[in-house]
Length: 327
Image 1: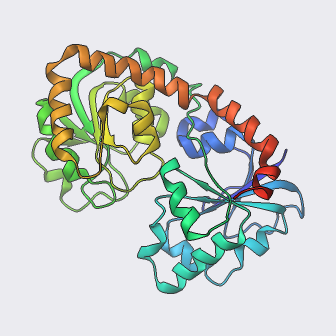
Image 2 (image 1 turned 180 degrees about the horizontal axis):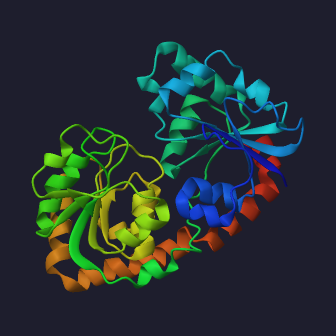
């Protein structure tokens, strides 16, 4: 089975396993599937009919979307492979903040591909209603942990971390407010959407941006996590916390949150319950330990590489039947 992957990345070729330590879930997918990657803006050198499947990752970056606007990207991709599998980076609604012509372009791409990979099972009804009859399935999240296993042995310190910055995309302010219940030093990562003057937020320390492997060893130091992000996408922060046994509070619309932390998952906007759970994690040691142990168990049950390999074997063994018989 040969798979090509198109994305906004500027590199060509495979992603070796040793490189997965630098980029988390996206490169973990590419490495595990042994994909050949090509830049979505320039894949003319890809062999004609050289692949069984092509995964078309449409970037959420507006500038690149505008460059793709005059391309029939699916038709061009079929020069390389007959089966085109769409993968959306970001939430299902990401295209709706773009110019109207980009929105129609996005819809036409979805109508032309053979299958849609989504990031959450909760996304499936959206796509089934948006492009009826189009096969859609969740692409399971994955961690390749070859180089981060020792992070699980790091002793946790009495400090908490929120999963994103102070913008609508990450919902950092909500996480920051509820995280006051932890009553301990509070940290945040530095993401691309960090807002102006965020470093001046009282009682909050920002970590510098770092490669994924380094990030995992730093994250392992934390006792609590919270990520009240209403942009329902890959959920990698929750998955990383689960791998490390860090109890994390978040919204149940995200698969990784709901499956790894069932006792810490709340309905969208339910900050009242989120606050109660934060308080319980601090004051009920048995509850904390239960959530921590269950997180590691649930990670292994749903998102280990062994589970991904089982899913991969089943899916790609039956993909043609899945597409042809989908209702």
